[in-house]
Image (cartoon, rainbow, N blue to C red; front, side):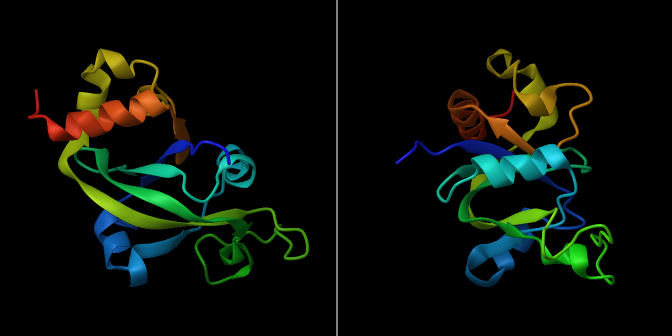
Length: 160
């Protein structure tokens, strides 16, 4: 069985927050609405049940990592692409050959302390982490096991 992989999932808290995930039945939700081919390919080609997720609040003041989750269902067609009333509707997507996919995630743990983007940027151990790179806008990003461990360790320490 392959080693689990690590990911960072961005979500705007006004749209879907970690609290929203915690409030879902069984603390599980479909991660739908991804409309970027590279992020879709990560879901299709690389994500497996059991993979770890850093749940990141984007477009927040401040942005940062709030909790962890796991992949509990591998990629499958994102039916919001075919729903004209959905904000994720894509008239070019064909149910017979779906363009867009989603995975299911389950909340695991709210971090003991929120870890802000500024803290991530200030940590020399995270210099290569994608989320801190200028212009990096992907809503789903790979994270190394070392980055995962460092972010969790930061959440255990006092800020600064």
